[in-house]
Length: 303
Ligand SMILES: [Zn+2]
Image (cartoon, rainbow, N blue to C red; front, side, top):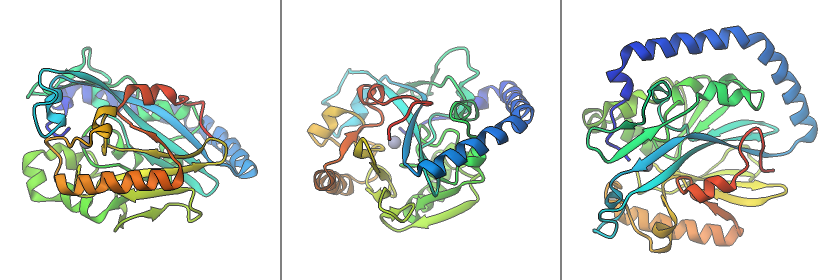
């Protein structure tokens, strides 16, 4: 998914209203949250366990599924995608994985259809509100990593401006490039608030103990990545990013028409399957509704 104009552009008044409202809410509840956070932090350090929280970052109705292969396989088909984001709580810090759809959608009375008609998108709640359900604020997020910088994965990223952004060098260059700027300036705007940047070149062990690893899997975009989490009770799992959007594309290794490299994508798919097999990891496709529905939703979690 790439061709998207932020709906707030057509709705500036609403945007201001949301901003004022959001700031108002966060100031109002600041004191109480601090207290709650203290309690959560203490609990986490004594339990010293890993938790994976899943959140609803909105819904994408794909009106033209044909975009998701190199040929006409999906001609005339449509499909509803989930759009999840996650918080991985580790004794050494909290990582947010992906950032849902743009928050400007929350205030719109109707789901928003992109000018080219390919997608209709909606989002119900803000990250600030959603984090409250687990006793956190955006300031409690130490790291943010996006599977890639498309609009449906970077929605509320700017809210996490105290977190360190773990981004592949190549993804940063892609989203900050003049070409991307000219084609779709919204992609850069969605992440420009992230000022603490740690650029990666390949895989990255986030907390240094092998439990949470960012795996470089380019092709969908130049610096696309997936996330491996080894949970103490549920065991190892992989969050797919957009390596595969839905089951059929995994089964038949179909590459969306808008990927930046077919060759890299196919190589990443092979590397992903080999890694999943080696680790005996459960695979969750982030846009596949059935996989999203399997996950307990915050405040519940997998551990
Ligand atoms: Zn994408």
